[in-house]
Length: 254
Picture 1: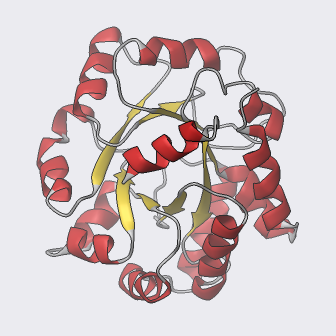
Picture 2 (picture 1 turned 135 degrees about the vertical axis):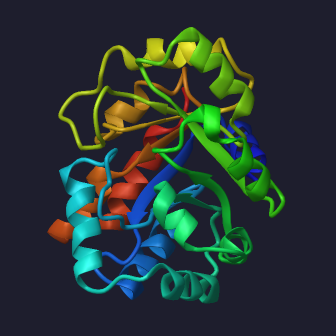
């Protein structure tokens, strides 16, 4: 499925845009509305983050949203049931830490597939330990996406490029997620370094918070994930759909 997403974007001379929405924030129904709004505004796929009490890869904006959802009693099973009932028009990527994924128990990937999830990202899963989870998810048509960081060694990048499926998630900064005023000028070089290790599509994330940040990497990446900026827009009551459209415009190559 992700291969089709990137292929369709390439045919339009674009990168894929993947907006991020926190499940259950500001409520389950509202978060599903934002998933639908992102799809209608031109998203190529949508990343949904499961709230977790110890989100080590997330910055303050997404931590706030996750905490707010948990405070309101967020539960994964009812959310997945609601997501399945809505059935998004966009392919869905689930961002979850290992403990919430394991807590889903037997049949987890069957439930995720029924909800429209085609890929999962697990930031606290080391690449060297990913094989069992990758095999289990693959049986239900779900790609396990691995993360490549600026600090990854060449040996690690080679393994990530070989073992990841769907795409490689290229972390654009050292540290956690979060909106930033300026893009890291090193990001194109990081993407090029990862590109040399794999034939998979590359998707950049962490710190892409302005359309010009996305435009700066169109020659180097196959997709861009925009997270904290969109979560902040939800929190501030901004025009979410207009913001998604502005990021989508920035994915268009000259």
